[in-house]
Picture 1 (cartoon, rainbow, N blue to C red):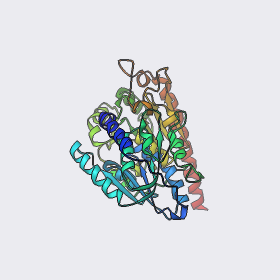
Picture 2 (picture 1 turned 90 degrees about the vertical axis):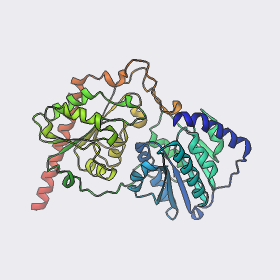
Picture 3 (picture 1 turned 120 degrees about the horizontal axis):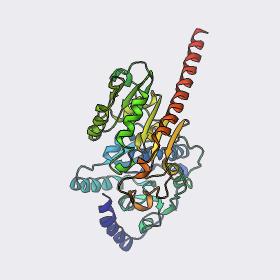
Picture 4 (picture 1 turned 30 degrees about the horizontal axis):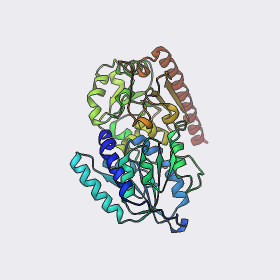
Length: 391
C-alpha cells in the first residue's frame, strides 16, 4: 500500500494539480453547515486519537451530520464512537476490489455535498486525492512538507513532530471550532465480557504482546512477555487475559504454551471483537502492551496502562489515561519511524535494540510497584462502596 501510494498516488496527485483548478468556497456560517466528513484510513489507535477533535466538531456544529471515511476493517470501532453519525468503509480485500470500491465510494460521497472535510491522514496521496474528487465546499489537511498533496486542499496546516498526535488532530480542526476539551468521544459497548468468557471475580490484567503488521519491530520480545506474565501469576490473586487478532494467534499461542502458570491465564487471542475488547479493557485492572491500537482504546476508556515504545516516540503516541507507566530506551536512533518516512522502521541494527535492550529486572520491579498501587486503590474503592451500601 505504501509503494502504490508513493508511486501511483504521486502521479495521480500531479495530474490533478495540473489539470484541475482548486476552487475555494468561503466557509459557510455555522448554522449552514449540514454535512461534515472526517477521513482516517490507517490505524485503529489513530482513529481513536481523532475523537477529541471529533468531539469538538460535534459541539461546534450540533446540527450537522458527521460522516467518517475509513477502511472497511475499521467500521466496527467507528460504529462504537457516539459522535459519528455514519461510517463509510472502503474494502481492502485485494487491489481490484480496493480500486472498484474506492471509485464507488467517491461516486457516493460526491452526491453528499459536504460543507467541511477534514483529512486526518498525515502523508498519503490516496486520502488527498479522494478529498479532491468529492463534492465539498472546504477541505483541510496536513502539509508534511514532503510532497505536493497540500495543493489538493483548500487549506493545510503543518504536522508538528514535537506534539502528541492528538494535539495535531485538534490543531487541524481548531480554525473551524473552539477547542474546549481534549477528551475522547464516548465508546459505547455492552459490558458482558466476564460472563461470556468466564473470567470470574478476580482482577484481570490484559496483555497485548502484539503490534500491527505496520511494524512488527514495535513488539517487545516474546521471551520478555513470558517472563513478565510468569512473574505476575506467581503468588498474585488476579488473572491474565492474552489478546490479539486472529492472524496473531500463532504468535500469542506460542507465548501461552511457554507460560508456567497457564491456569491463571486465559487466551482470548482471535476470540474478541472490538466491542468485547472495549468491555474487557474497561473492567480490567490495567493493560500491558506495545505501541498499538489497544493502548489508545485504553486511553479513551481511561484504563491504566503499561506500555513499551521503541521505533516510535511516546511523546507522539504515548498513552493519555490518568495512570500510566511507559518504558522507552530513548536511544540516539529513536524514533526511526515517523510521519515523514511513511511510518516505516529504518533500523540500523540486526535487531531493534530499542525493544530488546530493556533491563527486565528493573522493568518487572517497576511493574510490581505500579500494579500494587492499582490493587491498593481498587481495594480502597471496594471498601468505600461497601461502606456506602451499609450506610
